[in-house]
Amino acid sequence: MKFNFAFFLLLTPFIVRAQPIANENLNHLYDPTDEIDFEWAMVKQNGQMTINYSLTATKGSSPEMYLMQWDERDSYSQRAGKELRSDSVLLSTGTKKVGEFAVAVKNDPWMLLLKITKVTTSKIWSYPFLIEKNYPVNGFLKDGDQKVLVPYLDIKKEYTIQGPPTTSHLFIFRYSQNFNPPFPPFSKNTADSDPLLLPDSTFTLTNGQKISFSKEGLYLVQSDTTSAEGFSFLVNTPSFPRYTRIQDLIDPLVFISTKDEFTQLEQSNGDKVAFDKIIIGITRDRDRAKRFMKSYYTRVELANRYFSSYKEGWKTDQGMIFIIFGLPDEIRKTSQNEIWYYKDSRTKFVFIKKGSIYAPNYYTLMRDDRFTQLWYNNIDLWRKSRF
Image 1 (tube, rainbow, N blue to C red):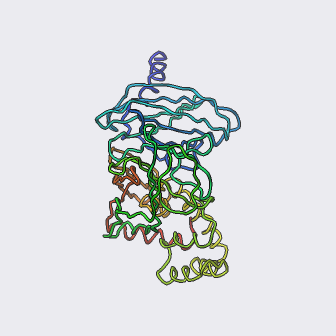
Image 2 (cartoon, rainbow, N blue to C red):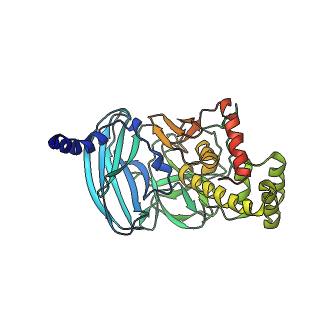
Image 3 (spheres, rainbow, N blue to C red):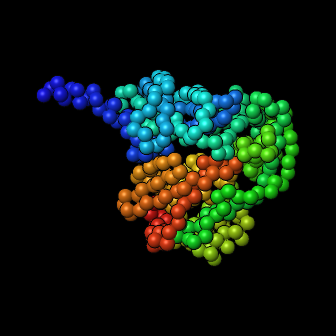
């Protein structure tokens, strides 16, 4: 009996690893309280697909060893993959491991899977990377010596812009369009997931040139304007993804305010006294107003961090649901869907991948009028500052 139990213990880690990614709960992807923070950006160059990443330990009092295992799989439903590489890294709280992993490009869609295991506890985090031909990102930016892994830059800060190595010049397109927030999850209207945009300005740069951007907006970089290849990013205030200006705080309130309240907010013209008065009017109490501001804009900041693409993260369908309903209890992924489950309300939100050259991994929500009552119930909770 002891032998069988010991054999089971040895077999358990293999069983945990050998399961389809479609069956794994991936809510750690958007969990700000997790003990590790993983950021990444995927770039296609020189016939290779490279995952640039940073891994940071955010909790703990002593250094911890983590194992990083890269696997190759055909799909999210494949039970076990082919191991490509394993690395171990010792991290102290606040320290960051920066690296990259490159693989040859294939004709058919496939995926990389990174599993990070904390050695002392055997806790595992999975990070899937679906590799497709649609809208490949073929360049990146550098902040000093480090590659930028987020889709937003600070205005007036200097960066190095790097396109395909075989290209001498790059075409830069700037769009100043202020994109609209999403409609509620029960609405019959949907935002355009692949917008047809007309640039406000166009200019060229030498590949590898340093540049600082003097205007906010969406920027698209291409070496070949007739192809669907390129890379895009937002230029915003240095505080982004956090909002600190009164004028920036107003728009995200569209989800929880009435039409008249939102009009009053717009007419406050950045005046803090007028803004605070309206918020107190919404929450009906000064202390509740303070709690509301802290909770709500923490969610807005996280939505901007996790879901920013060609527009600010709070304006995306995923950002909206994250702000109003919070981190899902479970997240499942397939090649074209991301499904969020909330256990208390027994609710499932399905997001469909609808990428574009501006945002290859953009998702839109499958709307349904059955979400109507749930939405208004949660809005009422926000207005009473019960989050």
